[in-house]
Image 1 (cartoon, rainbow, N blue to C red):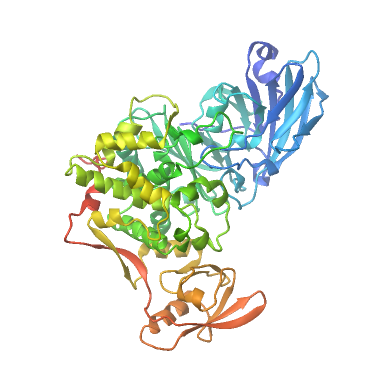
Image 2: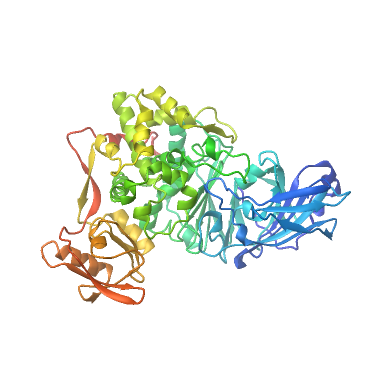
Length: 633
């Protein structure tokens, strides 16, 4: 457990932390972060960077592991000052690479002192460029508040960190304290820059920690911060399911590549919501009511499962194109259909195996993914592999037009592809082996501290062939690298189920619509509408809405002459199933109004998986837990 109450004392110079002799004897970069103004969205940092006289180039981390793009939030780096021995030193930003700073170290100097501020963004953006603080809490990614020498290897550069938090705040992180609190700052044991960037910290006035593996090694901890004490209330059943997730991952992979593991969970409506993987922790951010609202928990239960799987797939084993030497080298995302796609599949399987989801929730999730992908016209021109290669662009793409553009489909389509691979292995080996065996072979090995072992597509294919001989190269070529107008449904169908449609809104879709305030009519009318103002975020090309003249960014005003609501829209679609008259939608398009008539009479449509009794139910076998639920014999 990494939690300690901090007293708000004035910051001291690093020399008071370490003594003057430390600078001469140690190559450590000293980093001091003052987060006392985090509630006002300000971080202040000081660095003492060993250096030799002459030209020096410092860089701000650009390509952040797990974010798959040049997302380092340089735009919010402010107040940058450099000095030597208390005397200012001029610096100059590189004219081509905005993340690079040049300066000259004067004769006789052995270090450069850097002062900077980082303006924590409000609730916008994504990843470390997204909202990270409120009046009551902070999500700290160290890459936001540091520089490092160009050419230095993050695995070799050593950083010693001190952190000052607001009065009374507690924290959670995978970093280890060295046991000292000096000048009001907590001092952590020195680590490599690679480990530091890989070890985020959460802190807040409302903090709670739960041991998920009592008396077991390595330890696993759920660290939570929230905007209220009530948000930290977690039921014994949910705690048990998270503990079961820990045992299920151990059984799935057969080894653990970390010394301890921390689920860092932030519960707030005022920070960016996402998950980001790390070797020994995961940065998970959800709504304030995530743990206390059954629908919210059901909707996002797989998040912690997904991010934990990344400790094996993405951190320990990493695609060669993503295993770069430092944070300035461009990453190549071709294998994100493995890095993210396989992780996403294993994450939703583990959600069911651990008890966080029912099997029905799993089927609803997969059915919605399959239907959405099967109604994505962008499949007619763009192969899945291109969404992976272009991930750094697609993560920031607007939602309007995404069905024609395609989005980061390697997550959702990865679920379907790896489900099919799982089913094929079971069929080819007559039930003797499964994708679980591949996971133990490829991601298992010997337990120990974090390390990185890169892999290629050929490595994946070779390992699969050792588990179940098959033409895996052709399997992935057809599903990943070729243009496919239809979604890959082989895993669903081979698993004993089929994709069908119902007029009843599934529970998982209801939860999504309630949380994100939209109405999803893509499977019927072909549009998705935001409830707040009727904004049409997307229209599927070729759908009834498209044929009637609707387009993304228009606004829905009325349905059949009456002001629109989700209930009125759904009732009109239902009535049209027996009424030959078209559904009339009054649309606003940049201050102009028009009535669009949709000639649609097939009723509401929502995806579901229906059992196919002619085939064995392999899907239920896939979702069967590998270990007993904690507390059961």
